[in-house]
Length: 117
Image 1: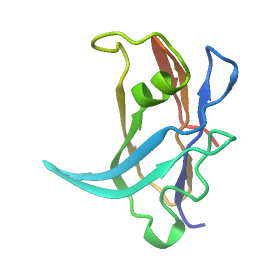
Image 2 (image 1 turned 90 degrees about the vertical axis):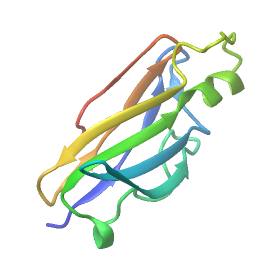
Image 3 (image 1 turned 90 degrees about the horizontal axis):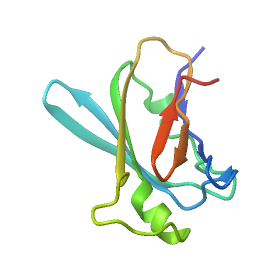
Image 4 (image 1 turned 30 degrees about the horizontal axis):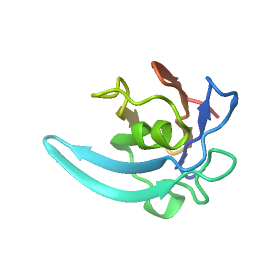
């Protein structure tokens, strides 16, 4: 089996997929942080392509950065200065060649993630 990475963002406050969230993926090696891809979530809260497809999959440490503040602004959540949740980084390791799914459950004042399938 070959490995690959996907994500999904759900707006738990509104009860719907989070469309239009800008996402960046980085690979981490020590103090080095390499930007791999920038994507935006679609109508289903997913990206139109795998974040890290099998052709470029490598075991290691990664970081997904969800630009949640832009999304919250666009959906009419009252702005704060500074916004409580703006940029949400999720760091995780991929130790085997399998499907990794790292979703984000988002509300204006909280979020959670897990290793999905």
